Image (cartoon, rainbow, N blue to C red; front, side, top):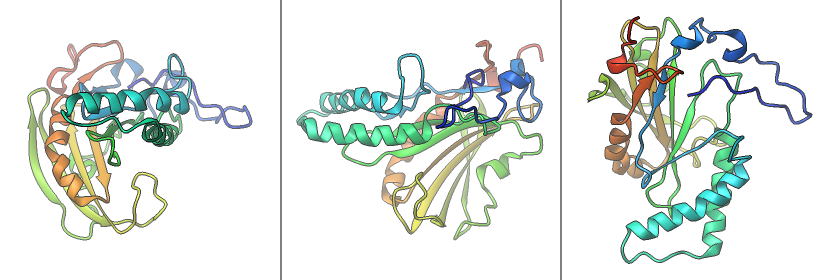
Length: 255
């Protein structure tokens, strides 16, 4: 994650007025810039698409969608023997969907206390994506149980809580919960009724920081089918500081 980027401009060209961590010299909760922990994901490009920030090569969500859609379909055809290319119309429709995802989840929002990076789980571009978000919350009072949603009051049944381990970081909490979709227009989920949320949380040792991975969808069967790939996604996560220093096992060298 990168907290050194500039603030968004409002539609009228003015600044949002929210100071960035780079301007403050620390996070909202006081973590110095050189001690902010970043989650790095080495994801499988056959299943996952990372939504970028804008600037540099990707100037805006539309350009990103137009360039990413044909690559996504081409990779799917190449890795699925017998699959046929869907044609220009389907690719254009996917490009529009990607642009919508990019507009909502791409870029950097300085109003948040930390940056949230969004990935699309999309092993088959004929289906809708499962939006999966990754962030490191450095709120000093946050527990791993709270971060994972163990006692979420909005759950319609008691969440299922599991221990989950990765080679890089060790023990996580993995929580599966079901809840009613309070807002039918919630753009994280493209349906109404019941949604399923899968959340992983890892407490960084001796630091006020919790790594959180959150995925949700109203397509309950799809989430069940995606669990192995979601587990593999989380297993690739490593931690580092802004200068690239690895945070092995969640411990900062020399700290």
